[in-house]
Length: 418
Image 1: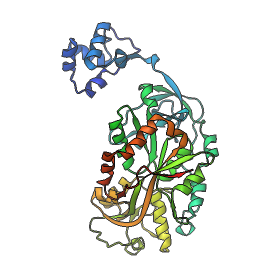
Image 2 (image 1 turned 180 degrees about the horizontal axis):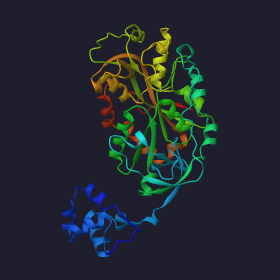
Image 3 (image 1 turned 30 degrees about the vertical axis):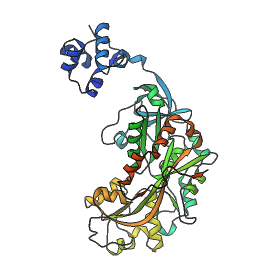
Image 4 (image 1 turned 135 degrees about the vertical axis):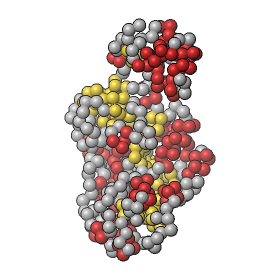
């Protein structure tokens, strides 16, 4: 039968996901291999009988295999970040609060290890796309002598809720769905920088197969900004206020004006300097970096690791710009480790668990509490409840324990209501 140009199918996708060859599927469905190839390539439209046989052979509904292009549903969503100004973008989708949020799958955001499947495709930009504040920088951090107080960082780096709300809604797009809308509803979005979040995401999906965890990599301040803007359900952070000796709470209180949130601890991790195995330079403190002429890599302004480095340098009276490589910015803990392993850098701030994973030396500088910040209204949503429930699972805790460098004795504990 000649193909209807508007008929779409994902026969090949479902077949390969089940590990079946074209011939194997043809044998089960009682059709020829050539027919299977013709349908998959879009050159042949199957009869009703053949469609039913294929669906039965693959254990799915006919509607899962075939659909008309114009039948794909569309939703209106808020586009995050500063995406390229083009009509069509691959996006991931999630329902956060009372609105759909679209996350562009562009550049590094399109990958984890493998390319990320899209949930939809933008088809119409309803309003001009504008920046969402991701490029905001903290004034006064060009030299360590001007390092602001934690409260000042929160004020300058984080958008207050009122400002965030004034920006959201300006990036509306129309998205054609490429997946079942029920799956998209059952999604939790988490922003944070610790690789443990991706581990927790996979563990959650193992025990709750219908739940999707969308993990957005972001340093602590950026994650909190995303939470303020209503782009994520949960923000992970490890910021420290040296004046009060508190972790995270002052920053959340400053940022979430007009909103209520709960902070649930994930654990306490060891932060410090990654150095090559055996520490050949003999580095013991951050001031040694200058004395020995060591080259470093640093994290972005607003990250907990960057603030730790600046604070420790300030305590020892060393300006940041005196450290060789201090302008070399990397964006993840893995990037720090890879820079040291490859010889690009002699040192960088990360965690004991990352050092162990890459076989590197580690010089401890601080024990930081890593908290999950959740807007209280999201606590009533079933996907969020399912994610939080796995924090008490013994097998999940065992996964964290074997990483090393984590104290999870208080995992799941509510440390603050704001």
